[in-house]
Image (cartoon, rainbow, N blue to C red; front, side):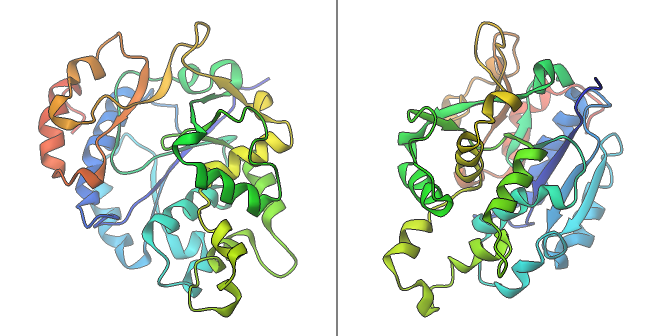
Length: 303
């Protein structure tokens, strides 16, 4: 049996969700991926931006010749967005991730945000141990409304599977087969899955002046995906839990919060099991501040 293939997807808006310079924030992500990812790990790294920003994004990212970067307009990937111009950027980036299978062809899709960066040499076996994707869990009680809304949308029990935990946030890995299954299950004869989700966020529409709409509106891409995968009994077929004795690596470390207490020597050291870290855009820190801290840990020549 051949090894499963892996693509990656990055929703990117130049000024980000918090008015920050997310285009320059990608320097840390791209430099660390160039330095730490094995050359054949990603078949494609798809960057998805608003159509008006595509030329600038493509030009800015063109220097990362070692990475298989393609830039695509979000309106081409998710044409439904053209009918919902006032949809929040936070919602758009979730739709972009759910739409990954419309453009990517790999067996699995690794999701990124602009404020993520790689922390150590990473190969296929790290992300896809034994041919299944690495899963990181978090306590569902951290965001109970996400799980309740997503369950209501899907018509499943919000406590399906292990009710104490669910799929953690970006970076994460989607399985193409499960993502296709989810989007098919959410589509109807009248609306695509993306249209159905967008319609929940039309506050001026009388169809949304209902309690039911309010109870469905807190969905997220990962809670929808994980609940659907659990409902069809597919988690163990496609995933391996990280942070265990057998599979010690994890996807994301949170030690960079608060930033002033961060010890990057641990983040990039051999004792850290996490493959990625992030310094969130909402911290308000300029990309140059973050890069000045981590640049000594990223091998020379990657930027």
